[in-house]
Image (cartoon, rainbow, N blue to C red):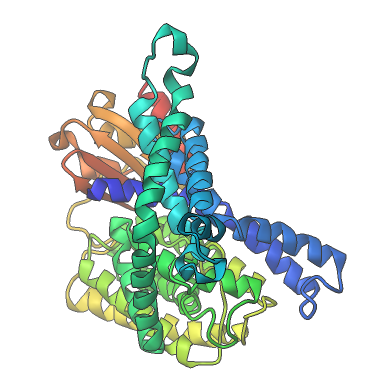
Amino acid sequence: MMKYLQKLGKSLMLPVACLPVASILMGLGYWLDPTGWGANNIASAFMLKAGSALIDNMGILFAIGVGVGMSDDNDGTAGLAGLVSWLMITTLLSTGAVAMFKGIDVKEVAPAFAKTQTQFIGILSGLIGAACYNRFKSVKLPDALGFFSGKRCVAIVTAAYSIVASIVLFFAWPLIYGALVAFGEAIVSTGAVGSGIYAFFNRLLIPFGLHHALNSVFWFDVAGINDLGNFWSGKGTQGVTGMYMTGFFPVMMFGLPAGALAMYHTAKDKKKKAVYGLLLAAAISSFFTGVTEPLEFAFMFLAPGLYVLHAGLTGISAFVCTLLPVRAGFNFSAGFVDWFLSFKAPMAENPIMLIPIGLVFAVIYYVTFRFAITKFNLKTPGREDDDAEELNVKLANNDYTQVAAVILKGVGGKENVVSIDNCVTRLRLEIKDQTKIDEKVIKSAGVSGIIRPGKTSVQVVVGTQVQFVADEFKKLCK
């Protein structure tokens, strides 16, 4: 089950990767016309409409992306099946259709059915499409129906399953929606405290890849909060909307890079040079793009107590930012780029204040990290007892083939590899024999970390250049 959820988390990153372009377009659009939001400037209107084309249709992106990502071989047929499922379910559960089925006026239909074109339904549609693809992609039909054999039957089967899902949701969706709204309202009702609790658990779920599920409740229109969508569309409440995003900026832009500096300063002298490149690259990634996994995975398993401290500080940041008159938002993550582009967003409020707030959290992170590392002798990068073999393989040199070769050697060679996949920062492998894995060899490739979520699963945290390493890894395994 955990492996399935982790694969879902990875699949969600495919449609999420479409959002940065929406952030850029809408950010520039609001900069050009901060008061009229396109009414006074045609270029602004063009950019805002182009960006909203993605923001307003995230459910469709999720249906296609999850369909492709959850399929056995990432085939586009599964994405098409996900779209088929999305169209079927959203049509059958639309307000007008439900009113017709029940023979009542549209105004009497439960409000839940007005919220079916959400990311939740998109994810469900993608899962149905992928499941049908994985199960029926190789089915052989009688000669008379031979045209529909194999992949061509997937859409037909998906439609049938989607009808069944729609019947179930016809009764269950109002209950599910009501429970999600109640959960969201319970958190919202606690104000800054709820914001801090959310941010705390957001970080704690990162190692399991399950943080996307929690994010969907607060960032998207699953429970009526839609913090991300409302922030950019201007449909939210000034001073409130953005509260579930703002607190991440001080952490990702300032806190974590300062924590990286503390880890560098506390590293053993003979190892500082070795960890310098890793920590610097991870800190820059965190600051500019908000991609924190390369840095977080560098210490979360080496020093789990330090990671819990990081999660707690993230919660405190969200709590503090919610109390202050400051709001900023993102479409991808809380890095410098999204922070800068959100200045003229409709719901933005004093985003420049995040600079002094961030500097304060930088000091807090540095002091607390350095104290915890030295006080409890935490084995952060550069403080490990055993030295990894020095092969001088660094991602900074763009020698992806050599990096892939070292990782392949560390996992026991290509005969020990069953399947190869990757997400935004991790190389995900299924292997035959865990005993053949040599973590010292793998770490010598300059990677951020290694995790073993299951008996046959290995994840190597490479960083944002993982796609190039994965491509070379696949070539070596042929």
